[in-house]
Image 1 (cartoon, helix red, strand yellow):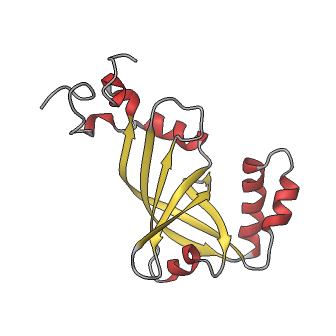
Image 2 (cartoon, helix red, strand yellow):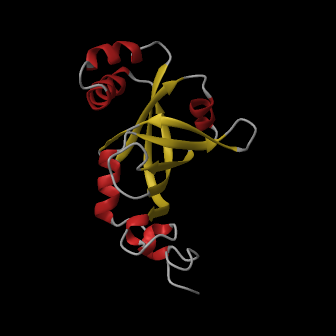
Image 3 (cartoon, rainbow, N blue to C red):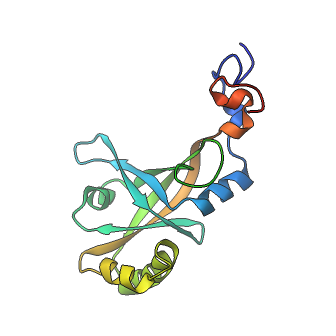
Length: 167
């Protein structure tokens, strides 16, 4: 086996995100891939905006969509968060496993809409809230249960793609 990032990229255990880097990624990113078991039993995923609050991930969707309806049969999900589209350097990735609960109550939706719209549309949260507050709208809460994988190319010499060390 050669030098990681210089000669090969076989064993990536040493280039996982640290706790501070995970927190930084989750603070910078607003979208993730929400993975669930699809209607045909195959893994499925959709890109969804999220809110991280109280140690849980919060999403919104509409009843009748597969990512909502399938959770009644299998609440296990995975969330894949990357630094794509952020100002964070390198290539960062975090895959979390968790269990999802679908909320339909007005109090939870009221709390969520306020927090979510301030995070995702700070210039005009009221306009975004009007769009979201629809009859079939639900809030999905994901409680993380573990980390399935993570990666931080900044921890790898040679930029993780065979480049010059330190570049």
